[in-house]
Image (cartoon, rainbow, N blue to C red; front, side):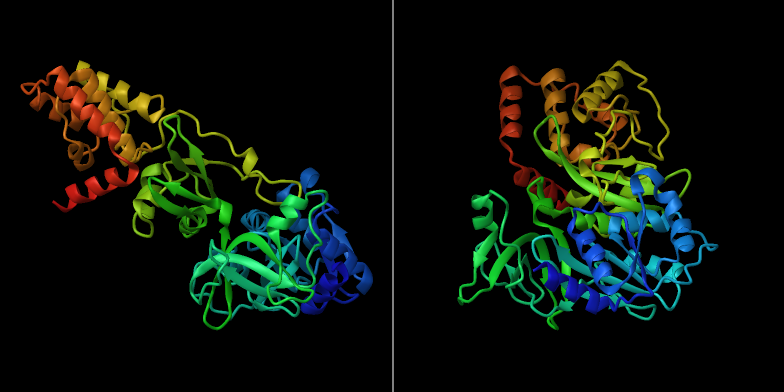
Length: 454
């Protein structure tokens, strides 16, 4: 299986003794095995770069000095490399930029076209530890990319790709499904894990020596057989009753000129609800505010796909292999987000009480009276929690829709002042509180849609 993978790899990129391949991965990962043994069998020079010790900022100069001809890394490392480049960086020997391991976006290709020569090709593909390379897609400066997601290519000899639904049935063209690889050249299984091997490696229903490996990746097959990699199956989450693919939010963020790198994760709030957190690297100083980011995302994304919090970082954490280290992403702090709205402290006892409720529900340190609830990280379910607290503690009627029409502490204080004559009895408070608590995620969203339509 390893020899077959090396044959496919070396034949597809036409490596020869004059090449110099970069290796940034540790020797134990599948990408390094392919690169190291493929190079040795072809008499190619291997140029090894210690990413942990040298850092990404030194990588470009080192590649020029070493006259690297073939660059290969995961998309996260490639983006960090490109973010260090200037017009002065020239790569006269580089003939191939090969990205894999993570979804590649249109902007990645545009950056290749900007910084690398016309003699250099760009290669996106899908390679999996258990199967090796299954798809490849070569591009040059003239290759048009219409979709935001860059294709991972057409079939490779000996590797058939199937797209399956949750019940294991094949889906049609232009439909998403789990990528399954059917081949005789797949791993025999997982060491001392017969249970996991049985779950992930399936026999071919047609018989014979081929097996089917379930990758856990999501794909979409075009009618001409071109495959798109849509992200990981385990990166799909439910946000307020809606299924969300976090890669789509990352694409929308990477489309913004001010954002050089982006990753979106789902974290659980104290209330038990999940929310999206975006970790961003910006090439602009100062970085865009939360106000600017949320407004920019409102056109391409529905509300439930817009992150609740944005964390600006100097760089995204990486593993020793150059992949994004999701476990090293920090928890968002409790500071008030950077907004376009200047901070104005509460002026009255009512505003002070409301600001206290907002900070407790939102889990942040400060709320200005003119801060927008949704720019602070709130959403429909947070609004119901705030309304519940206000009704319970102040015993006044506060229409839920009023918070969506003008979602600020100052406006809520005005609404409450106008409702002071309508004090509620204990029984009415209990009834309304019970109704609010009984609302499901979907019912809250539907209620707000109906209120908006009215």
